[in-house]
Length: 109
Image (cartoon, rainbow, N blue to C red):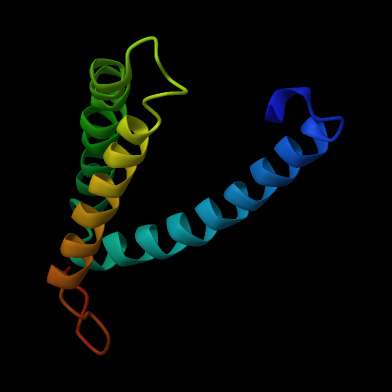
């Protein structure tokens, strides 16, 4: 299997680096957009609350949902984790399509 491959640590390190770069691109665009959504007076509180509540709900429920779908048969039931990730991706795309364009608008004070 993958874990017995002589290149396991090389492949795992490469995957971590690639995912870290992708996450950096996503997070940079996300925070820039959030800063434009709220008035200056509430900007830090609003963005921090939105970010951390999302992390609690999505990040906290994911292991529970995946464990319920996969259980101890994580190799035979790989689809459970794929299903949750795909569902989160679909939710993200729907939310992205619902966002308003902020280019050229005055930032709320």
